[in-house]
Amino acid sequence: MARMRITVGKDGPYIVRGGVPLLRAEIVTNDDGESVAWRETDVVEVGETYRLCRCGKSSTKPLCDMTHAAVGFDGTETAIHDGYFETAVTIDGPGIQLKDARPLCAEARFCDRAGGLWNLIEGCDDSETRDLAREEAELCPSGRYVACDAVTGEPYEPHYEPSIVLVDDPQLGVSGPLWVRGEVEIIGADGTPYETRNRVTLCRCGHSKNKPFCDGSHVGAKFHE
Image 1 (cartoon, one colour):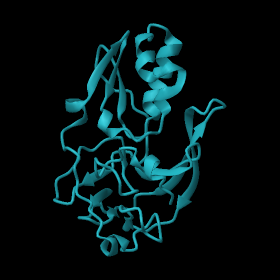
Image 2: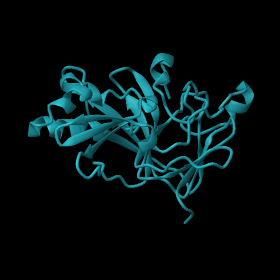
Image 3: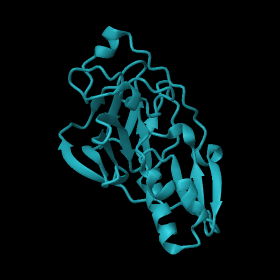
Image 4: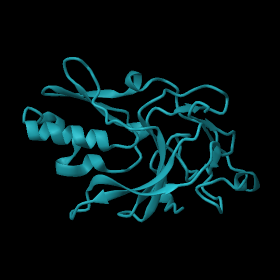
């Protein structure tokens, strides 16, 4: 089997190789409308190699039907290739550090609960608060947030098998990004690899200003698969 990887097509689709599983999941909210969990809802049958729509206009979404060529889709990549820990800011709390790379935000809103993740970090001398802060950081699909041990710097990361998840956001009534999990390699259109990470989100609405990564533009665009 070929190595699992995603190649960003120039002004075209994501070309997925290596039989990466394709799933669907939705954001679960509580009675207050806060994002609290993920619920996997379906498995999409795909082959060893498949192409995922990047322009947001395919009639066969999530798969590409070449509409990008007809509409003149501009898929120019604007994201930087620097490593996450080189660019993220650090927020210090008792026994914990929070790393934050704001440009990666996919607007999944797991960081809003209980007054917000930034505020929770300050109260992490309380074990329950620390556990909640870690949970919110680990639920973030884009990897914008990473919680780390304050002494060792070791990141707290959930375990994911390699997969791509089609995100649905029922609370906002939109379809979200492609959630790439489990250190699947992502290669830019020019052949330059992006940092391989445990969790990132790729734009599939075509509107992100941080392509190929999601910047939450699907919300304003009211994107629906």
